[in-house]
Image (cartoon, rainbow, N blue to C red):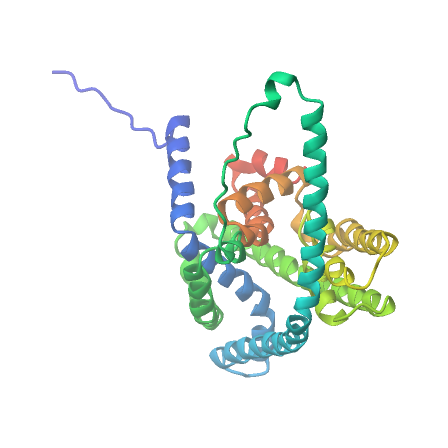
Length: 353
């Protein structure tokens, strides 16, 4: 009998790749809480790693330096939260005034809509006038669903808040061992390329976090100063809210209007101040997205506008608000990996075109 050589190919066909991608996306969807927690921990660990390295050069044990860096960030966030809570209490005390204005505005809008419906019915064909309009009752959405829409379930938030500090600490403290173990996963000939890719990922993620934090601080200070100039109530709280909302790609120019316009409803009786606030905050958004972000973050990320838009749409749809936060770091990391793998270099070139 003749023996035939059977060649086994390790290359996957397109259908297998599509199935594999489907499995990956299904895992990212169903295990979103775990994956988001890990990615946020990685992002924060890359951001704090330079601080730990400096402390290590000063002969501080790495574990102690990681703990110090984590406690410093926690203290800063707690201090900012304390300031915001103090201002928020005043806003809550003033909420009855704002809600009354909103209620009056909705009442006026309902009346105008009722008048418009009567005018439409007056010019409608005669055979349709006798019909009784059928109204479909819409299920009211609870406040809980509105609060957690785009952010995730309460379980996801508790999972992130509980495990994130421990993950960041362990990633920082054990970074040398993890780095060495990661290198040993690859053949010796490929380790230099893997090391270069990991260093590039570190630069990209660190630049993204630091750049966004700096731009957010600039926007919050600018909005705070502007609200002080126009004598708006709770200027610090409104400045922080508008500054952070202004960072949202594309929609931030409109979302940043909402806090000051809501407070201004009890003060302004003409349309001029509303238009002025909208124009100034839109100007801040344009400067941030077209001047500050490219100068501070864009040089390191190297993603084109189309790739960023698609990433925001996809990851925002998959994970909501946290997906919008992680979309650019994930896409930038994918680009770095593609740039260092010969088979995927065309994809990396497309992402940075």
